[in-house]
Image (cartoon, rainbow, N blue to C red):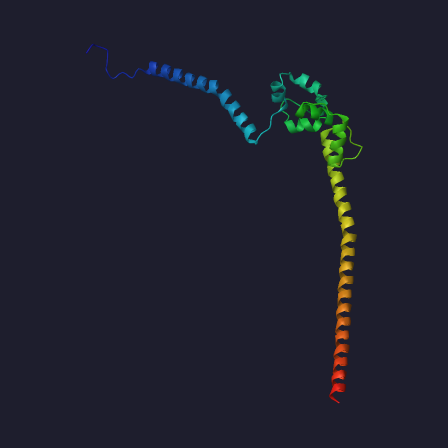
Amino acid sequence: MARGFSSNRSGGGINVIMGIVIAAVLVLAVIAVWGPIKENYRTNSINSGTANYNAGEIADQMGMEFEDFLNYYDLTPEDGITEKSDVNEVADKMTLANMSQFYWGVELTDDVFAEFKADQGIADDVTKDTKDADVKDKYNQYQSAKQAEAAASATPAADAAAADTSSADAAADTGAADAAAEAGDTAGTDTAASDTAAE
C-alpha cells in the first residue's frame, strides 16, 4: 500500500455533503407533492360531505375574482364574507333573489316566489330582498306559531271528542238499562201468562 493512504478512511467530508444533498432532495420532494396532497384531501373532504367549499373556491370555479363574486351577488365586506367563508355563511348573507341565481342560475320570478311563500307558509313580510338568515328565522317563527295554533285547536277538539264519547257511553248505558228493564217486563208478562194458562 502506498504511504499515507489507508484503506480504512471514513471519507468524512464526502459523507456530510452526500447527507446534505439527500436531505435537500427529500425536502424538495415533500414541497413538490404537498400541494397536490393537500388539494386532494380538501376535494375528498368536500365530496364526502365533511367540508364545504369556501367563497374563494366558488369564485375561482365561476372564473371570477373574489371582489367580482361579491359584487355579482350584492355582497359587501361589511357582510363579513371573506375568501375563507363557508358556502353556508355566504348563503345566509344573500337575498332570496341572489340565492335563486346562485344555486339554480335562474331569476326568482314573482310567480315562483309567491308559490314558494305559499308552500313554506311564509307571510308577506318576506320579500325577494330578504336575506336568507332572516327568512330562516321568520320561517321558524311561523312554524312555531302554527304548531302552537294547532295544539290550541287540538285541545278543544279533543275535549269535544271526549264529551261525545262520554255522551255515547251514557246513551249506550241508558239503552242497555232500558233493554234490561223491557226484558224484565216481558219476562214478568210471560210468567203471568204462564200462571193464567196453568189455572
